[in-house]
Length: 256
Image 1 (tube, rainbow, N blue to C red):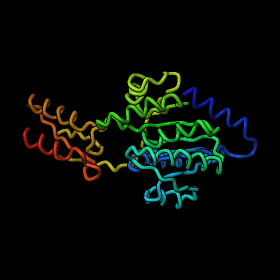
Image 2: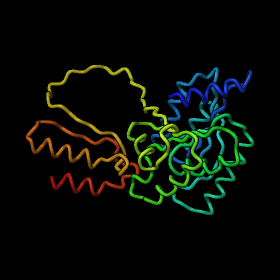
Image 3: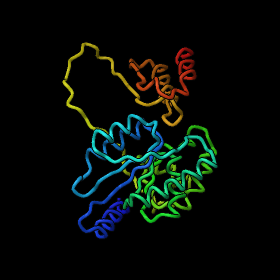
């Protein structure tokens, strides 16, 4: 994580009494909101302060910001590719950055990452980008084209896993020196231990039913173990939100 340390040190030297201001830009919620919340809850607040820019319809993320007295800024970002809207978003981000003057910008997800990196041509702060599972993994190859365009303006990719690092360096072709792995993490609650008479192991996967989470691979593993007559129970946790693969999964389960 040498790149991130150098960025933090550089901005610490450039600010005397002020904190390092980090602007998080995103157009989606879900795991990204959890990611931002964990950063806020664990960051050294004596050294850093964060602000959030997101579309006004992201009520949950905005509610978190308001609850914690985090400044948030409305910015219109569409999920789908829309040249006219995306150009407007570039200039909105440029205007916002010049207004609030962050030291570092952290863009989350493919679309916000694309427009923010294009906007970086016109702004001074260091731009970090975390894909949170590249959008092109969902079968939308046009997003891979956008990633390859934006790599020309990429300063730092903060990959949230080794596989994301591999995607960035091998498929998007971003130089390895510009990619750092900062693994996803979760807060572990204090569970109360319980004793069960059920001795059958349970294997779970947690995630939306979309291609980026690869639930079909999980099901193929289930079938492999079942075909070997291994006594294991399986469960998928996360259905109900953006379930693009639900029908495919239901069909596979019934067929097997």
